[in-house]
Image (cartoon, rainbow, N blue to C red; front, top):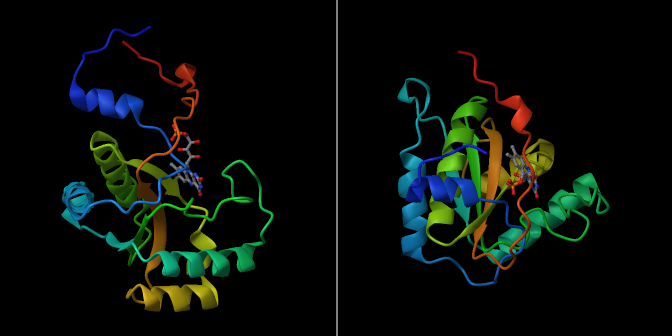
Length: 183
Ligand SMILES: Cc1cc2nc3c(=O)[nH]c(=O)nc-3n(C[C@H](O)[C@H](O)[C@H](O)COP(=O)(O)O)c2cc1C
């Protein structure tokens, strides 16, 4: 076992986990503003700030997005991420979608982790969602990019479900053998 420093930030990083069951209540404006403040502070290459984020809080819009998504990829996709029973956004009241003009996956990843750790620190749960990518391609992509007010040529990078957790899953295992110190 590693001996580590106790600290509130470290604690939130170590206890974050994916949440896929949320209560129906919407998060507060102050909570959302806190997440946005932390997202904006994410580092980016040469401070290029490529990420454009849409926080969708319209339940009807999310339902329609899910129908378009499932119609496109099929309603019986694998159970690991509970696609077969859940909508892609796991019924979260807020779904953040990150777009960029280029394929800035690294920058989007850093912003995503800022949002997830900040959310954890204020009692919210998150689930990062890459699987919805096909929705933002082709005809459905044109439709939803227009509805979300983003140019058609922008790339979908990642989505994040956000809400109050309504489950306490087991922590997923990690492979310690991938971390080697060379002195
Ligand atoms: C890039 C990325 C894409 C992911 N896509 C999905 C997804 O489409 N649907 C989903 O339910 N979970 C998704 N996840 C969540 C992972 O399954 C989860 O982070 C992983 O199993 C580890 O669990 P933990 O976050 O609880 O430690 C994604 C996570 C990452 C980092």
